[in-house]
Length: 101
Image 1: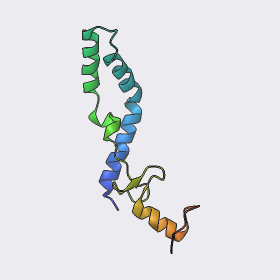
Image 2: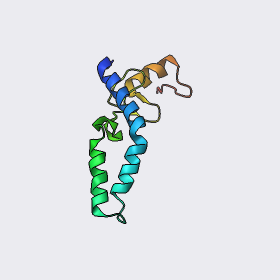
Image 3: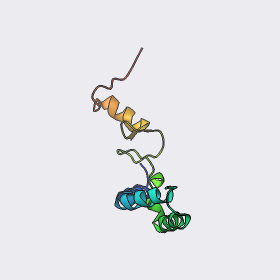
């Protein structure tokens, strides 16, 4: 089980990303628009830099929803390999069968 603080910090980051998504997208589109003047694009970059760092989507860490583990994460299932194996052995994941030969 991951530290509770790390899981909560990641949840706060997700909330910030959702809160600032529109503003960040608008400023980014202004900053890369070649038709605008250099001063306008530079001002947009400065405003973008003033936004909270944790509002950037790249700062969100993929974590297992069952255990909070940050590594060996399957995106499609949103869980780690260990949680997947445990739940699969208990028969809680439909369609997943433990192989044996």
